[in-house]
Length: 284
Image 1 (cartoon, rainbow, N blue to C red):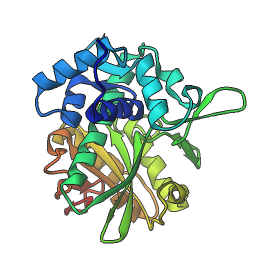
Image 2: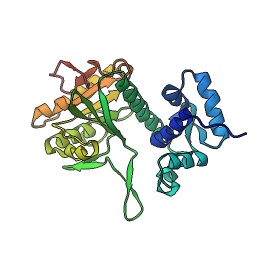
Image 3: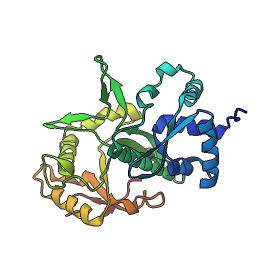
Image 4: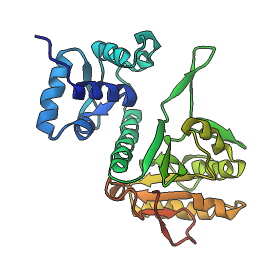
């Protein structure tokens, strides 16, 4: 017998379309009161051909994405045709599992900030992840967030905007997995940081005013890294970069993974990448 589709089922399917890949625990956090309830319902959705699952190396739980019936449900809910959806490019199991782990980490932050905003007077105006792309005339996919300034090109992990009391703020997200070199301005973290310094001066971030429907005086680039030791190393590397104006370094903020929780995200957990700035900062 075909399972009755509930409002929660529809929300799950729409989230899988939005997030593309979600782990079991991510879906449980988004939609269920307990893991047992999540397991039972998701198993039924899989049986009905609405979702697919797969396992990936170094990821200790199953990953969910849309199956054919789920895509048809999304099209019906969005009042469009399946051919108009971007799902077809993401219907296969990813082969790059390092990329998948990073992908899920971006989704972790997206869930985190979405749920944190629900419990505060802060509004999430929008969230654009790095995997969003635009088709070129040649049929290739160009990442929407990829940008260039001076001799630097970079794609942020995500761009999002918050609003509180009528004031909007723009943020770029960088999730550091602790694997890239820190002090080389030609690659890794420091190259990314130098990109943002030039980006700040060139005011190229103003391109996102159309996406979020508001103007921005500046931005903050947020870096989440595994340890305090690595964060301090990053701060020292950025501080040692010769750049004018030096104040631009204070628009790069960092914190560690253990502090980036729903209850602490909008607290004073962020520090400037300029070590002479000894204050802690809030993003909300």
